[in-house]
Length: 218
Image (cartoon, rainbow, N blue to C red; front, side, top):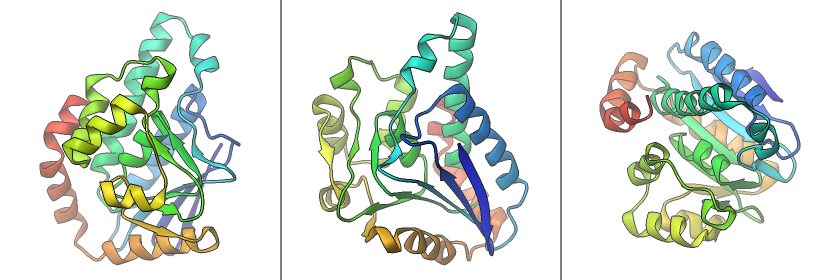
């Protein structure tokens, strides 16, 4: 579901379950990975998150979620907020390498990383909740407000617009693009270039910068 490997000091988490949709099992594995990564945040450490095949992450697995009773559904929501909060505050640089589409909840997973590199020839990032009839919780809305210009947030949430790499870079959804055959290497190179700061200071700065956003995700 999510494979974790280490290349030097770079932790590489690869979502490898076809559409890489977010299910309770996905959440549990991601939380396990965050525990592992947080326990190994020596100088030079960084994390890259990537998918396989057509999708980076195709949002929530609605079929799996619909089978949950109310307590489990509430627990699912709490775990999702915890994942976003921990990714935002991870005491090392994080880079999302968008190998394909990042829709709805998958876009928010990407936005919880510090930087995003998109595949240059295909793949969209999209806040598609308006098209599927799902309201956005205020807590995850704050992720967009904290990461994007106001006009981009407005257009993304009200229209469900799909952004390919070039436009995503222009409006702030992405920081760079790369050919698919170089995407992972580009993400690891960016992560390594960012991982030159003292981890304690990096952690303190991220906690200060994202404090109000992270508190809203508790």
